Length: 349
Image (cartoon, rainbow, N blue to C red):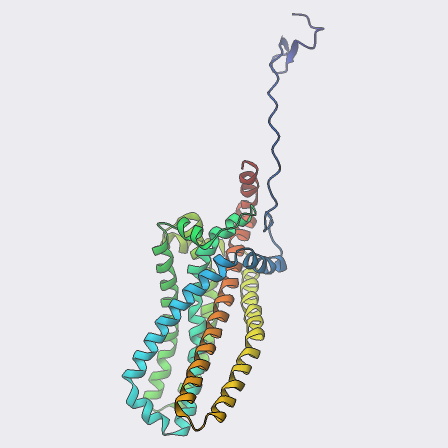
């Protein structure tokens, strides 16, 4: 073998001997680079995570807002049925209550507190919504849109687990409230209104802190079930492990995202509520002579207010579920190198 012929021979650098040159590898066909995804394949900053929730909401509105609207419609029907049954059951009590102005005022205050508590109890539904949105979030890294029907089909075999996870979290939140509120009723029964009032305020604070801490540690339950096909028990462990690091960052992102989106929705809905209330007052004053017209105006106004409340809740929880899934993937990028996996998957097509 001629050593001077560099075209046909080469040195084996393991042995130092000359050998025949190995054939050149075949050139690969050119492929276009993978498309830039909606969400960056890297760890997000604090503000980028909040903005990514809005970007994802606009990217897949049918999946995020559509699923939230369906879930909250069913939830509202369930609450309406339960409220109607309770009103019929305690109708004599409510009739006696309406005859006393002080008792009515106190009942309205309790009703407002109950409405606020109910909105916090609804956080359990975010696990179901985040599980539905998680498939669209995963596809958005490759700039692929996911419809609601596609996400529902992709969750075959996991839907019952998601529903059970949402029901479990709602039950845990309600159980905490009942356990902390039980001493208040006990103090009221033994004629200790001061102790009942003090403990009610303390119990509300304790419940709020317990609710925030527990729901944050288990925030990724629905996403883990949907993306990683875990059982409810393994999903609880997975969420607990992922939220073990970066607790305050996640708390700030989720709490601030929930608060800002709530304020934004209220800013849009409040003028509409004022207009409906004004039209209701004018209509009632104009139709004083017709009782049937007043009833019709009241029913239409109540339906419009209920629809606005339903839409605002759906938009609020749609954004919150998008933010939860964004934080879920961001936490995996920070702790498990998911960004490298996503980049490799997109390059392989």
